[in-house]
Length: 433
Image (cartoon, rainbow, N blue to C red):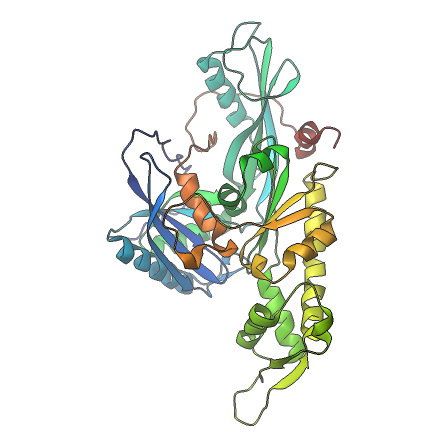
């Protein structure tokens, strides 16, 4: 089979929505991260939740900050993870649904409005509105990853969930648009293509993770998902049951590891073990007297390990967490996640495995914080039930649903309706919060 490496990525058609009466079909998903590549093959459709039939994982050193920097290393990791999943499932897949968080991924809002003239709103009107909404999107030289209807308005009434069949003079729609830098997406597509796979859909990682760890009430009341990956931290803000803002921060758990390695003059591998087994985000009184052993940087038989109080390790970790959560707080404010109802945070990603990080985040951000672990799948391997695999599980749930994306459908018609900035719809959504 020849590698699928197009010179450009065409607009992607969303996966066909599945009805409960349709038979199961296999889907492959791929989470290509800074430190690892994970794959799942699952059966979706039918009358039950998606069912995992194969999984794979390989360490990866071909990415930095979520972006491909070495095709060969990225390809080897992708190929290895998919091979493991295919062998377990007993089938070979030609394409994947891929998670993506690189390319300075960010949100913008577009809006469109059409004249109904007092009549009842028909399916044709909804198609016309979607056409106008697509025409209103200006990616400004970037690539559109998602364009999801966020709000419907009727004659100025905000927050209409289902306008079909109602009467109105004017029907409007705000669209949450997620974009990323085009070169980062092309590099991702090439790395996957060199592994002899096509990309059937590209999904913003924080939106995928949200599907796996958030419940309907959280999305309705208001919640921010914070996914702390190895090289990048992604944020997705939800309100009224929909995603209304996405942001990324080029910092993650690998920065904690490198800080530990630098502070105690040890190797990265030793620093990673220290962070995993001895590290914490909150110090205890015992940490002042309990020692941790720092392995030497050189394994020459001459250098000896040293002991330091665990509190010294925690202090290094907290310094980096202060920098990271400072950036997170600024991103949340920019996305409009402020006010008395903006008090729910869900942490996920590999960085969420750090001991007591939920307590630290709750104190720093002044919010109620919990750790999000993936759910909604049958047969998810125990090794992939932790927060580090929320995006992977969410990609399967994305493939099993209809996202309602209006950009990756070929719609006829154009509209010159003006666009509106992100702050306008955020003000609508959060109102007096």
